[in-house]
Image (cartoon, rainbow, N blue to C red; front, side):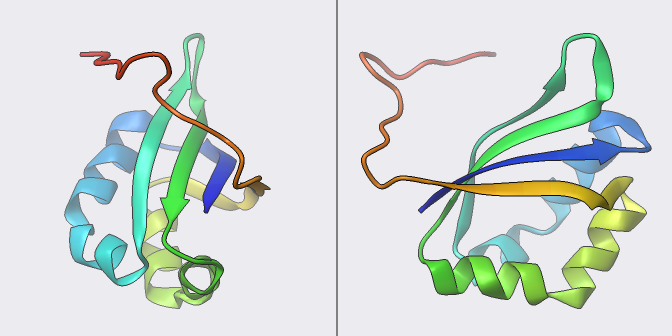
Length: 102
């Protein structure tokens, strides 16, 4: 399942990105893959993501993981500002071709 999220960052994108790169095992545990993550061009504190979760149960476990919530907050994620919007299974990505934004 795809989920679109927004959240405010108090320490900017790089601190949050470093945290994400340090929790790969947690991400595997929660069946999650970032399809996209980035901040607004003119606002490094406003993060937008698209996350793929292997199941709704994985999403629930992510939300209930207190240790991960603490790590996210320490990296500047203002968790109380977060929004999570599940997307229909009819969605598609990378059409008509896979993009490389590097």
